[in-house]
Amino acid sequence: MVSTANTVTKREIIIKDTHRGLLYRDGVLVRVLEAGRFVVPRHVDLGFFRTPKSEVELVDVRERDLTIKGQEILTADKVAIRVSIIVQFRVTDPRAAKHAVED
Image (tube, rainbow, N blue to C red; front, side, top):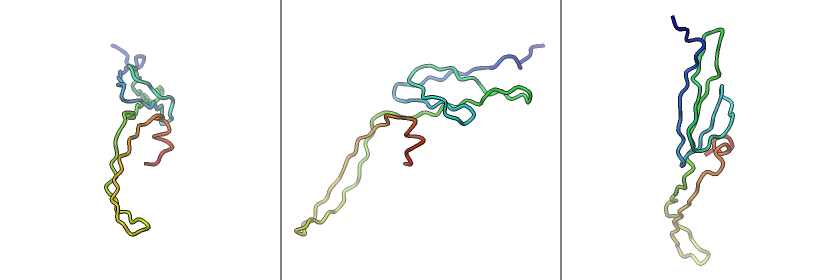
């Protein structure tokens, strides 16, 4: 008979260069994972023996475009001007993007 209590199965996660991973253990942020291959242990709960539950949340760090539709602006001399804006942004700090920024 083989005992499974002593063996903790592991899973492998690969983070691409366009993303970063936030590693959480029991809901607490442990560290930011750069691009590469990582081994994350699976959660085991036998009542008397338990391993922390590990999760990895991916954050996209690629540059993105956001288009703000045309807005009518009335100048001081009563001339209407239509303005459209294209904003380019990317995430530089994944920890702050998930925990400090609202939207």
